[in-house]
Amino acid sequence: MPAFTAKEQEKLSIIHDAINGTITNGLAATKLQLSLRQIKRLKKKVREEGDAAIIHQLKDKQSNHHIDSTLKEKTLDIITQQYSDFKPTFATEKLDENHDTQISYGTTRLWMIEKGLWKPRKQKKGKYRSWRQRKDRYGELQQFDGSYHLWLELRFCDENGEPLEMCLLAAIDDATGKITKAIFAENEGVIAVFSFWKEYVETKGKPKDIYADKFSTYKINHKKAVDNPELLTQFKRAMRQLEVNLIPAHSPQAKGRIERLNKTLQDRLVKELRLANINTPEEANTFLQEVFIPKYNKKFAVVVAKEGDAHRPLTEEEKENLNHIFSIHDTRKINNDYTIQFKNKWYQLKEIQPTTLRPGISVLVETWLDGSIHIILNMHELHYFILPEKPKKQSKIKQPPIVTTHKLNYKPPANHPWRKYPQDSTES
Image 1 (cartoon, rainbow, N blue to C red):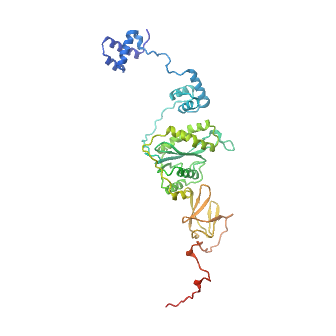
Image 2 (image 1 turned 90 degrees about the horizontal axis):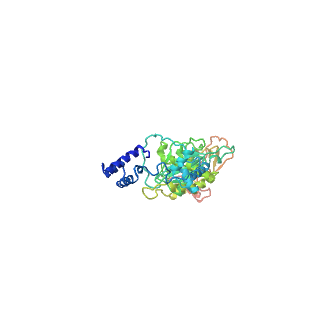
């Protein structure tokens, strides 16, 4: 007679009670948490085959759905050679996508643990943070951040062979979870951020709100992002001109979607770039736009609560002034000799200008994204040329103002007919 486990003995006892009529079939079904039909079937088997019929036929045998050991070895060889640093979920996807091997995530995970390719991690007890509901419509809120990482691993290095970090600037839509725009840049400085959002509003329009990192994206604290210590002010000013509300996040968890996206991309995108043999930033940006983002959005995007695009189109005036808006603004004063000093260069203002100039007044100096300098006063762009060296210091001589050629400033010459009339000093 086979050895029964305690659970099997209990089950057999209840079936015998049902056979003997000590308890009803319904009560037996309740005790064993089986259906009435299963109880009747078990009673019949015990009568015909004896007590051994209570034991499951697959006990100590392989499952009918077990995977052949040859397939397991072949799969583990592929994972070891090509996906050794992949997480089980991503490895499962790549096995299906590139090797026509369909196995479950759980199976891949167990095999990788057995092989030592994956180490289970204990769940950390995190702080309590309340869940924030997604926005209703696409384009209402864009979460934005930059992520420094060795995106091309050791395949992109400097002259000394040191691997170079790149910064991935990315925006994710709060309502849909889609990557609305992402691009590799050298840093998270003002020029890179302005270039990102200038192209964004030109192609997609203006989002209602932008959720950005208060401490890193807009207050430069990375060794590579050293081009403008007042990025927050510059970006806030540009967004205000476009009537886009900028929301500073007080913690990484506040803008959790973009933070999670960065972690996901640092895992998945790095490996996708490796598999595609991408070695340069230019190739990486092309792959990102044409392959990765569409694939990511198709897999991870969620259904919006309400249909419609909340992006607003640029007005004609905004389109005309886009280069002025997305430029670095500084103020300088006009010197007595009508020169302006800016970043160790001297700019000489020309005599003929579209508006009246005087020494001592402040002008706006705009540095455009292409590096060109534009000097603005009263919405007019001033004419200038760059001096080869610092001008010599002038003595305190009163300089006449540079005036416009407007007809109200016109002075008639000595032979003008107006001057031929006699001047009568006596009053009538």
